[in-house]
Length: 454
Image (tube, rainbow, N blue to C red):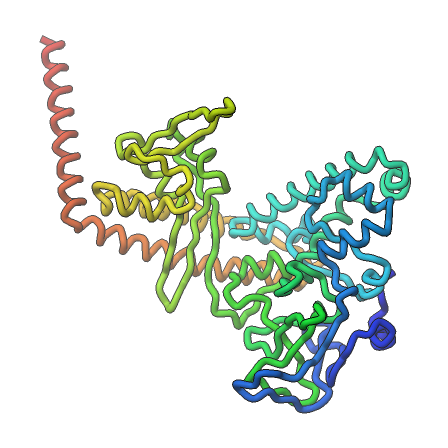
């Protein structure tokens, strides 16, 4: 059972969780949080800063805890072996760990938004990401159902009784992703109490692990707090608005990080499109960011998309000594299959006309961004205040605003880059030769037509 928040102090004492000069309380706009009970300070350069929270190792939920629990619970071990140890988080709480979950477990990650709320994401970088995540969760849930239905204990507990549904699995995933911490010694973990610390772009604390593998919350060097002030940590100062909303269910309006990731498809008439996608090995994307006031973009796949056989690209099926066939990528007769993740750098350095190639890529990326901007501006959904929660509406509209501004500036920057490239000497020469070739072709066709007519 989940723990009522008023019982947390007693539970903490019983389970050796140490709250040092801090307490859990209700904050003004973030639900529950942790505040200081007195004035605190950690001078800059301090080696040992004040400890605010300490959580014993056996309360931390991670892959190691799962393996240990499987040794004690034969039914759970059967389930773990049946699903192959590769569910979304591979973590399951022991009774002691489950008791640490607060009763208030509402999360507003986009994957748990309602059918009326999800249209707020149309045209944003999260539209495709959320759809892909929901499909992955659906596949995971069906895999677990299929694998565990043959185990009498789990079939009766989960499926015969109808106790769980896909909605529960999606909610569990959201709980895990929004609370998971990356501990320096234990990796991805869920840590009771510390997971109640809220985010700030100007955090006062950070989490770590001590020599006993306890998770500890420490005051940041140089930080000071007055009595009653909320203790905060950073969930990631480089995360984009879309990443924050996807993983934590909110956007920090004070964040200075502006970036987005959009899908990038090959040209529809490219005969090598399928081979390029297979060789690339992951979803093709373009990254756009604003750094120090300037727009930066990059996309390895955009370069692969814009080169073909006449540039020196080739695909070959090679067979190893065991008879296995593999698709290999060749660039100017050199096998570059293992360098595909750095294709942009590789091709830019070796292409005979690098400015011409960069122009091709810039045009392709700009067209892609223009399509997304048009979708973003034209698909602002109608919303009914009675069916759309206020927080979902606020963050959905804020994401649209942030990404619209970034796309507009990126398209303008690409236009300037195109104009600059069009003035490059080898680009002018290349385009001039293309015009000459086209003129000769038109003249030849006209001559042929005249001959045929006469």
